[in-house]
Image (cartoon, rainbow, N blue to C red; front, top):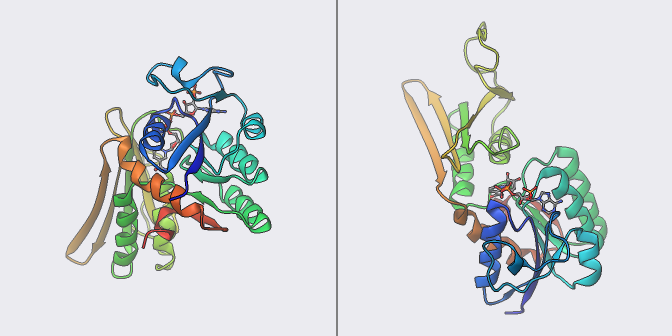
Length: 266
Ligand code: NAP
């Protein structure tokens, strides 16, 4: 298999550290450089937790792409930075694999247009855990039969965006098979603001943030006399890496914009 040359943005982060491990332990992946806005000019081995990794650090992705030849950028940073990075990578004909969440609909449309124009692949996946993708797919099937749905997503308390990218993606997938339906009592009133969560085409999304959690979601379906719960739990960030690996491998053979890991799993 041809070696895939990779740059990782956000290597010191919780996801970034796992991605560095993944790339360094995969035979046909080669880590060429990392982008870290705080440690320009240093080597990865100068930072805590990366012994013996003689990999250059760049503060700026554009400068990195001018100096380093790469096939794929893995971005695990923040939504604002991730969008700039994805656009810059495409400009330099490098394929972005983006795990960063919090992209707006407009961001996604803009990236899709760039990919179309440049005929270059890019994948944005709000959740790289294969079990989470199955949870979304199973929820989409269940929504054909159960139209009253509440999504409860639960994450660690350092998460910046709410609701999670996974919850939004789940709601979008469900909406493709379910018409808008206002749920609950027609006259219901919140006595505490936010008690019913966010309203997505009549479905409700609730975001829980607690230390100790990683990434968890349950989708609750109700109808006369029965409920169905579909739940997925990520207990560590390694759970996302099998999806990152598939995405990096797949994007090398794809010249379009892909949103969601479910679109590349057979
Ligand atoms: P994190 O631990 O806060 O890591 C983010 C890292 O990005 C930090 O090290 C941060 O550095 C760095 N960073 C910020 N601006 C940067 C820049 N301009 N250039 C380079 N690095 C920069 O967060 P995380 O838990 O790893 O999550 C990262 C992203 O992945 C989030 O958007 C999260 O929601 C998402 N996520 C996705 C999945 C998935 O499956 N798709 C799963 C889990 C998380 P400083 O802290 O020094 O600013």
